[in-house]
Image 1 (cartoon, rainbow, N blue to C red):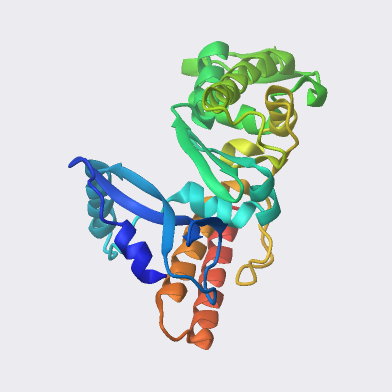
Image 2: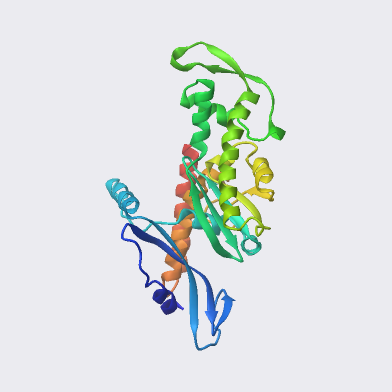
Length: 305
């Protein structure tokens, strides 16, 4: 199995790109496709279908320099959308067809799974910070106040709007004034809907719209905004939920905040691949490591309280 995957890695790549990861999608034994795990099966010819995740070489170099500048050693890049999907999307949902949407600060990434394989992965150049900027410009308030307003009173779906008047401080020490939560909603909903519709256009253009019975899974800090699920259901016409961490025994007793999902997914992804690459798994050693990482994460979360 390892040899056929290694053989599949012999391909030409543009000079400006580097490989982040190579994912085995399915195996083919003697012409029979759809084999997920060929271990223990018989046959004369084994083939593999792979999905290659790449990034710009300049991006990889800059990340490496930034990590080493802080005194840490650089190990590898991690495809965060894939790592998140492994934690947040159940195998049955991947089989039925599902899409994970990671709403970050300045961009939003979508990963589409069909038949338990990655069908597509793409990024749109808009994220939660753009909602904050829109509020800042639209209401003429400081970015810091716009962020607080978004988190405290913001929503992106009419069904969860609580109409009231709230006081905001004008830019440059100008006197306080009142704005309605409906005005805040109008600004935020427009941008969030734009993000969702950009993803929908890509999905439909590639013919995936009708194959996602497993629904939509939201993650990232932008998923925290009130009404994100309801708006997604309206736009995609699919069942939608915020992803939750399950089976993570090495972290307990913390609020399952989508803002932290990526960090936890990276740690889990790296350790899982390290364990898979070892010829003999020293499980006691890994359990101790996971406990240590879990305590570190819990300490990190408590600092943000």
